[in-house]
Amino acid sequence: MKWNLGYLARVFVLTTFASGATVGCGQDRICTLIGCSDGVQVLIESSADAGTNALPAGDYLFSVEVEGVRHSATCHVGASPGDPAVDRCDSGDDVVWPSVDSTRRIELLVSGEPSELSLSVTRAGAPATSLTLTPTFHDFYPNGPQCDRTPCRWATIEVGI
Image (tube, rainbow, N blue to C red):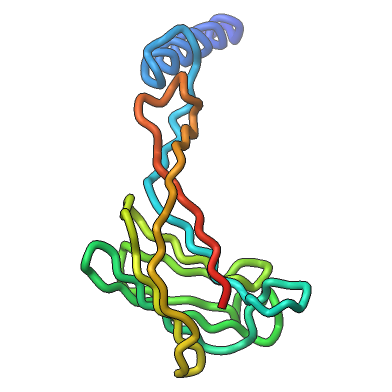
């Protein structure tokens, strides 16, 4: 049997449109199905007035308390900016995900929608800061507000040490 490519293309477009229009938002539009999670992004950067927010090289220990549960993470910031073999972070749980970004700030991603969190930072064994953070959440619709029934809630907090 010989297939007509025009026929197959029309069938593909019609089935894709029909499934996208109903799965994404149930209206007469095509919606993507991009997922997201609620969370807080904590950006830890240098508060020194040196024209950059890059953290000095060294070992950092983070303790984050969320809803009465303490989580910890460690990061090593190397002397050479942006070297993934040197800049590394570790966390042993699924609540706090640390990383070093390209501007040598440390980013902690905290899952959920906590009303407040406590953060303690130690650098090279010496306390660098300890404070309580109150996130201000914003609604985020990765597929657009016409397609997502409920928004993801996201907050960003910048902390200078």
